[in-house]
Amino acid sequence: MHRIRYLVGSLVLLAAVLGAVWLVRLLQNLDARPGVPLQIEFHDARGLRAGADVRFRGVTVGTVRAVTVAADGEKAVASVLLEPGGAAQACVNSVFWIVTPRFGGLAGGASGLDTLVRDAYLAFATPAQRGSPLTGGSLLTGWERPPAPAEADALAAVEHGDLLMTLLVPENHGLRPGSPVTFRGLQTGEVRGIALAQQGTHVEVQLRIARRHRHTVTDQCAFWVARPALTGALFSGFTLTDVTALLSPFVAYQGEPGKGLPVRDGHRAAALASRPVEEPTAVPAAALLQPERPAEPPAPDLVLVRIVYAAVDHDFWSPDDPIHHEGTGVLFQDRAGRIVVATARSLVDGAYSETETFGSQPDIEQEQIQVMLPAGTVLRGARVWVHAGGRDLAALVLDEVPPDLLGTPADKLGFGGGEIGPDAQVRRVGADAAPAPPVALGGRELPQLAENLGGAVVVAGMVVGVYGRATAHADAPAVVPLDLLPEDLRPR
Image 1 (cartoon, rainbow, N blue to C red):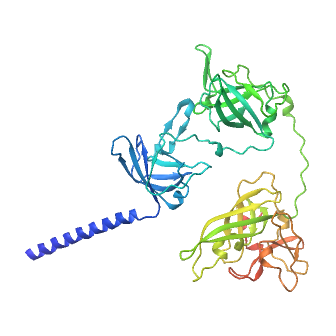
Image 2 (cartoon, rainbow, N blue to C red):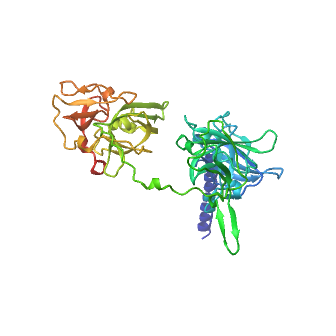
Image 3 (cartoon, rainbow, N blue to C red):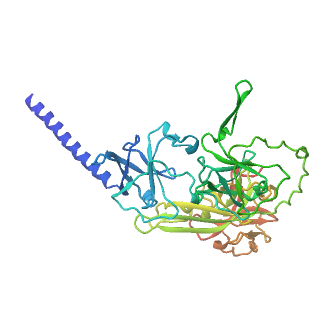
C-alpha cells in the first residue's frame, strides 16, 4: 500500500515538474515570437486588457501582452507585440490610441462604437510623411483621443476644374477637414482646412466644391454651419432643423437658380450666423418634362482590356521572387450584370504559372490584378473562377465599374467552339490598352505566347477562345475554348 502511495506521489510530482517546464518553455516561445515589442503609456487604460488586438487600418497586426501601472504610478503602460507586417507600418511619428466608445456631442461626433459589444483595443495611424521605423523596446506616449478622422492626406485629391474657396465663419462649431459641404441636402464638396484668422476675429474654412457641382455656387449664395436647431412655439408646434448635424456639423449653402454670377477660384464668402429662414425653391415645372433620349452610341465589336498581374513567390530557403505578368483579356457582361474579363489563368494566377525547385506548391502572396480599360481607366480585378480541370482559363470580375462601360456584345462571343481555319486571328492590346495589329493563327506555327497571352481568338468575327498555355507550366501555346466558362459567367 505504501509503495502504491509512493508511486502515485512520485508520478504527481513528476507531472508537476514537467508541467512547469512546459509552461516556462511556452512563455519563452511567446517571448521569441517574431515581431517588435513596444511599450505605450496612457493616463488611463480605459478598459484595455491583455490579449486585446492592435490594429492598423482595421487589420489586426499585433497583440497587447500586458497592461500594468508605471513605477511612479502616473501612467498605465501597455506592453505590445507588433507582428512583422504591422511593425513595417509603425514609425516614430505614428499615433497610438485606445479605441473605446466616444461621444463628442455636436463637435466631436461618435467613434469606437464597435467596442460597445466587445473589449477595447489599440489602434495606430501613420502619416504620409513617414518617420524612422520603430525599434524593439521603444517606449511611446499614446494619445488620449483618436486623431481627426479626416487628415489632409486622407482627403480626395483636388481635380482639375474643382472650385477652391474660403468661407469666413464667426466660430468653428466643430468643423474639421473632411466635414461635408451640402447643397439641397446633397454633398457637393468637403472642408479641406481650418485656420484662425490672423487677427483672431473669425475662422477661415477652406472648401472644395466638385467640378460637376461648382455651377451651384454663385456670388448670391448664402452659406452657414449646419447645427441642430429647435424653432417654433408651444401652441403652433416646434420644428427641428438640420437634425443630420447632430453628431457632426457640416457646411450648407443655398441659392436661387438664375441669380448671381459664377465665382472664380479663391472666392471668399462670409457665413451667416444661423440657417436662413428662406426655404429652397420648389422643383420647376420644366423639370417635369420628359427629356429627349440621347442617341445610343454604337455597340462595340470587341472590347479588349490590358491586364497587369503582380505577386510575390515566398520562398523559405531563398529570397522572395517577384512575379509580373502582362497580357490581354476579353471584357463582357454576364447574365447577373457583372463586368467579367475572360483571360488565361497563367496570366492572373501565380499558383498556376509558377513552379518550385522540388515540385512543391508555390506560396503566392500580395497578389494584385489591375485592368486597364480602352479609355485608360484602371480598375481592380478579382479572380473569381479558374478552370477546375487545369485548363488555362480564368474569369475576373471588376470593381467600381463606370455605369456607361460597354462590353463585348453577346452575339460576338461563341460558346460552341469554332474551326481554327486560315482566317483565325489572335487579337490583343498593347501596354496602353490600345488595339494591336491582329496575328494570324491559321498557319503551321502558333504565334509567340508571351506577347499574345490572354488574347482573344477570333474566328469569323466571333470570339471562340483565349490564347494560353497547353498545360500549366508548359511554354507551348494553345487555344483554350471559351465554352469552358460556367453558365453563370456567360452573357444572357
